[in-house]
Image 1 (cartoon, one colour):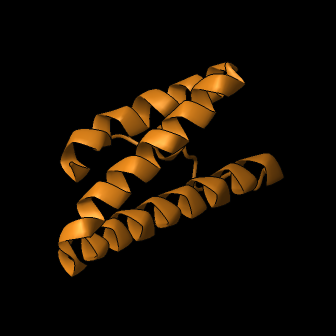
Image 2: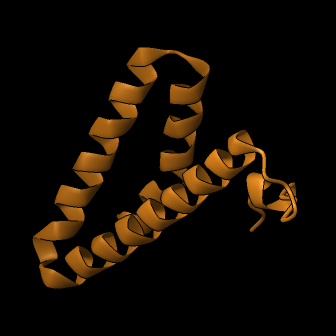
Length: 87
C-alpha cells in the first residue's frame, strides 16, 4: 500500500506545511490501524458482533453518501470495500 504523503516526503525540508502533512498522515494511519484492530477484536468477541458491525458500517456509508461531497463519497466507497470482510 502506498501512502501519498509519505511518498512525496523530503526529510531535509523544514517546511511547516510539510511537517503538518506528515503529522496528519501518521495520525490517519494510527487511527486506521486502531480501528482495524478494534473491529477484529469485536468480531471475535461475539457471534452477534458481525451483524452489529455490518449494520454500523452500512449506517456510516449512508451518512457519508447523504453528505454528497467528494471526500464523503470517497470515504463511503472506501468503507464499502471493507463491508464484505465484516459480514
